[in-house]
View 1 (cartoon, rainbow, N blue to C red):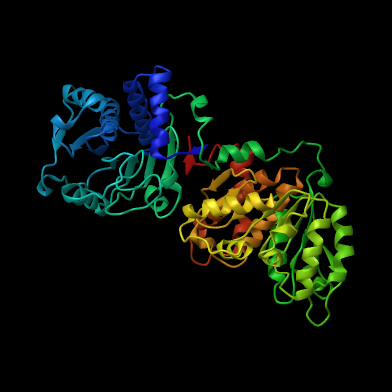
View 2: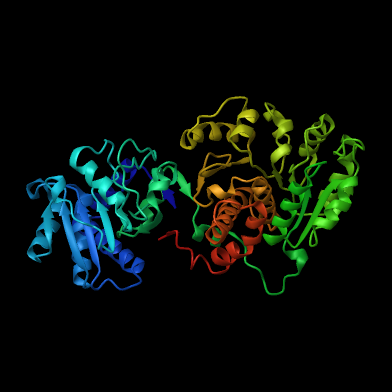
Length: 524
């Protein structure tokens, strides 16, 4: 699914109307009906007798609100429409639908002053149809006051297309903005709805089909959104006759003194994410520790620097022998930055013949040395956070996640490998420049070890035969969703990496095994 800007959406609408001959009035009707159905679902299918306050601005967003009011009224709700413009200000399709609700004698009143603002305390839902996706100004005067009163009312709010006051292209908020619990966005999701601070204003996002054929979206240039249906389609299903050797064999090179936790978390994540066999290679003196920490993963003691208990250059041969026996490998969690370990990794990457996930301390040897990564002839996923990517490229990154896209594209193209940039949201870039935005994850996952869980999850998918790009996109989505499930049960504070590991099977079950049937925070 594509993320689009307001101009792109306008062009899609134009093509549908002028090129396909779909009347604009029909698109508005489909939008309003779809939003009304969404509201009915949110109210558990029973809108009869519910009080729903709809605030309509003077543009097409307001027109969508009129259609919503008409359907809700038809289904037995008490739909009240509050105009934030004079009736004479409505034009085109919005005017047509305004006249329809007037003819039906729905309760309609214009808010001309603060005193006209309704008491929302008894409302079951507020619908924000004030501004559309093209809004680029700052809400002022009476509308600003109305937005603030809606936000202060202890009533659920649903935004039509995008919360009023939000820049739907950038996610920026310059003034008062609706804090929606739900957003019914039309045809395609909008870029600014998935980048902060905009993401925090949208609540749960539902994409509403407005009747534009899917073919019209295929040529859209822009960012891709990772969705439950995409993940369900990409992750391979298991044949009933499979044994552990058919489900992927993964080798993880990890750990040094003081960082056995990183190795254990990555290995446990790989097991939880479905790898049939997981081998964990660690410095020899740490092997007994990992034997105790892990049950399902198999440990492989490797040569070490005795006093430092880290991996030396002479471990190169044994590591390569181990990797020959598996389908993919993960390199880096907790290996440390001893100069011999750095040299080991520089020599290792170009000699491996299996797909690689390169993470954490495994990235450090390649800071400012993209030519070394080019020596790898296999598929590879790098998983840096912003600081690590800045060190890899030798240049600082912009503070805003949306502005990091072009530097990410440039570096990915230079090294010819998939790069996953951790953040809010996480971005995954292919060597060809395709960007995927991951909508899952939460602030509770800002905890040591969560990145190691991500590494193991991606590695497991890579070992199952998925491509590097698909493994990174699906791994990031499932990892974030596991964190969301954990946060829903135990809260953000105190959420730890082991909790994310524990919820990985449930994430797979809901998204992959049930083909996204129960995933509700982003659906179409």
